Picture 1 (tube, rainbow, N blue to C red):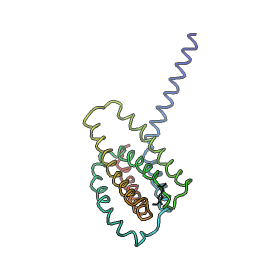
Picture 2: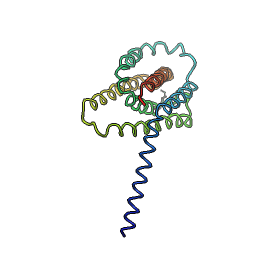
Picture 3: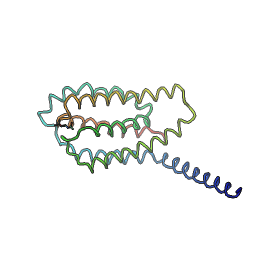
Picture 4: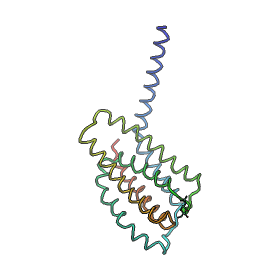
Length: 196
Ligand SMILES: *[C@@H]1O[C@H](CO)[C@@H](O)[C@H](O)[C@H]1NC(C)=O
């Protein structure tokens, strides 16, 4: 009985050791993985977009300018919490592409590949973040993090509203995909701010 218990504990300890080892390892290679993911996602996204925005979309583009401005406005605050910002941006991108895409060039397989890749980084970042956060909640830093998430959410809420207003039409999607491309380029900048 005792031997079995001891063995059981040993097993649990080994498993825990293994996971903490894996998670700390993967958190140190976070930047490399994020850079690769962003690069691949950008490549796939670009392959599904038109090279130029069709002329007929220019008037819709004007309706989107205010939303574009927001990304610039919130950039500095996102840079304060780069990991949290990327974690939230990736989740919001996944969600955005879950909407009606009939007017886009995406097929189900490439969309699944695109979203899965982002989702893996969401989980990866989530593990690194929860390891960091264990000791400091609630705190001013915790509030700052909530604010970062909120800013990203509000910005994507406007993207949602735009897609809805334009009934997920071709122009709306082209414009939104240009914006997602900007977000991914920003993620690349944010990745460079992550301290190892
Ligand atoms: C998706 O959007 C297209 C383009 O606006 C529209 O024609 C279609 O009815 C929509 N489909 C659904 C299920 O809402």
